[in-house]
Length: 88
Image (cartoon, rainbow, N blue to C red; front, side, top):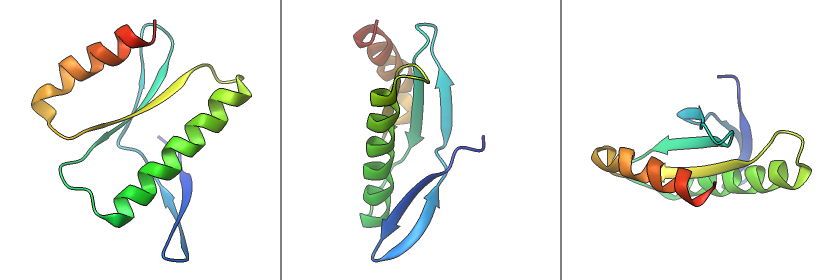
């Protein structure tokens, strides 16, 4: 994908590459992460992603973006539908 979001964990710099970028039919871009277990490093990644998305949305030049973590892939369809409906 090429999208790398910088973040720090325990004083060390890293770059986080999201699992998926999804362009929804309502033109919103969704950064989707599939994750069953969330340790402290993963929490730092997700916090950085949320901060990055807030900055992109405030800039308003790349359209609307959102971040979502799916913890149960069997529920992904309903979660995506909910995200889409809530962002029309």
